[in-house]
Length: 359
Image (cartoon, rainbow, N blue to C red; front, side, top):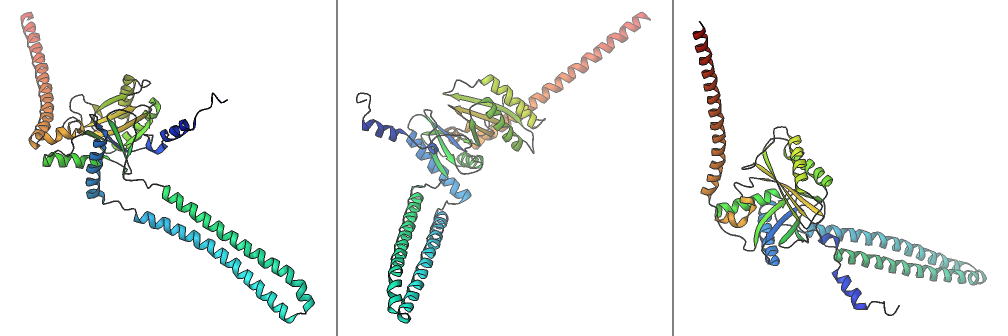
């Protein structure tokens, strides 16, 4: 046993390595997937600065005073209720003491001697009980205070370990992170200023789930039903797989395309310039999902560095390119129709000529 027994330092180091479950990327989360070229700390710092700046403008500053007041009020209520119990017990004890004193004055000495023993014992027992109750109340209050000190309030933005290099996931308490990221990118395009150096791409993640085909399909069904209720759009599916060998890309693409088409019968896939892109990021055992508008055209794959160099003219050019492609398709369709009409006319002429020769 002595040889196989591990040292105390081993257990200390293993305890330090163990981290809380909240600090890891898990299912049912929303946030932002940030990518960088090394320098992850600088990437996290830049992401916090940008997100907090625009979130304060849109949603207002986050305050913890209300939460603290609520907890303090709960503690006070607990203390008051328990103190009331102790005061009631003390009043009962004092009433018993007064009654015993009156009996001593009015009664005889013999009865007094008989009653003095048990009354004194009862009084001492009641005092001991009151002290025990007060000590228990103080201990409970101290435990509650320690729990409240140890408990960390969920911040609006908090880094989470995702388990991949050059990838940083920042969890958020916002229901939908897409409007915030769109506001950031629009501001970068208008002002044409680089806000980040290490942070390259910041992709909003609307939902996370376990990296299994069934779980991914169920999560995409819910997102697609809510996203394509009002309008039908052209779409494309982008899948990235990191540190996972169980998920196959081909099966996922075919199943997800069917799900999006079933959500709205007018949805059509587009390979060049889709209106919406379904972004699927698989990292280890977790899959990140989001519907991203104007992914290839206006927002340049949500790359903040390229958006800073991308002027308004280039944005309008991208829109014109999309319109030009649609016009080309329409023109091609019209030419095909013209050719079909010409062929039908030529066939009719040939038929008339053969009939005339026969006559």
